[in-house]
Image (cartoon, rainbow, N blue to C red):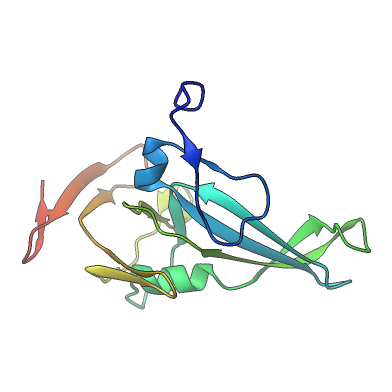
Length: 173
């Protein structure tokens, strides 16, 4: 609706050489740009892509024993992972690639989701140390204003609680 009504502008970002991304009023609040680098392990061809996203999905920690922060989960999500992708370089076929992702911009409000994979239909719990400030390398910090917490065996079954930040502590609603 915003695009067809002409209520958009180019999203000004660093390093994007392709067509400019359009930015709506909702994007101004929630959107950020992700850089994804994929390097072919066979011919070493590197492709860098930029994408606009609205929800930062972080992986749950591998261990239930260690208390982690959102910053630590973000750093872990930036590590290279192996994927089979079509190589646009010399190979011109499906090859193993090392893929890394990172944020290159931050939105006015960063929405973060942390979900652990379900085991036999039951969501796994893990300890989380809440940070007032999420520090992202090269991007500054984001301040925690609210959280939505879930307790229950699955996303469809359970109880959701919201909490907002006061200047001294997190208040449940």
